[in-house]
Length: 308
Image (cartoon, rainbow, N blue to C red; front, side, top):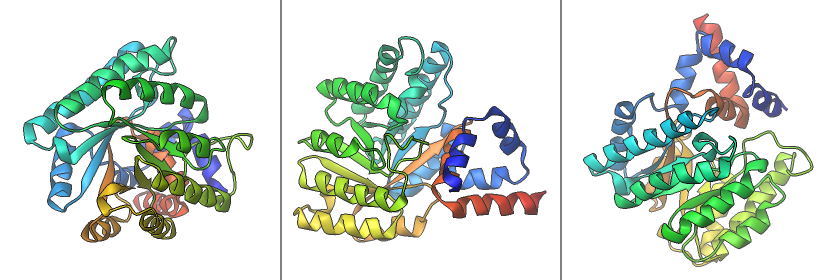
């Protein structure tokens, strides 16, 4: 049960300082974070395109405490979109955004986040791509879904994310699985109470399958976010049962995890998108990657011991 402990540590300033200073941290962070700047991430997008892969780009950073920081986050995405436009990569890369980064948790945060994310969605549409709104902890979801609905009025390809560990998600999936929608299903990576979320891995996996079936049988475009070979195989079978062609849904996996599987799925004719995070404020994202898989934590521990 290390996952909840690591997720709690992701909110600790003391742990942030310790992890940042640990001698082996950079080696592990580099596995999951594609770089700190746009210049560093662009070659990765180009390489993915050359391999038949697509990407979704996440400028990491969630600890926003002022409106000015939220505006800076908006501007970071606008800079990214401008670079993708200049390089002709707009159709190979979409963006993933966390509304907390756009000021959602501040006073008047719902309206602030909507005002900041709208120009990003507009700029993405102008270069032939789109934006997906990432799911965060359960207290933020009603706001996220409302912003998603508002953005889709003008930009119907705007996507959103749902998390199988939440009890509410099957109902959300039924509502969202409509024509033109784009929905990513993930297990979930936040510390949630037993009153709102499954705590047992087997129950989370079962819920994941139920939600995937709902999306595959719906009229929208499912995006299967998983590294689990069993869930990937189940998703393929559910797609076949629903009569979907391979380009009528896609798989998504994290940068730095199961890269061979990225290529295998693409070679089979699937759309395969690599979730690629970059930026300097990597701590929260990094800690959730450790929480998701014990092997990642062991890799981190060995790196600290060998570098110390």
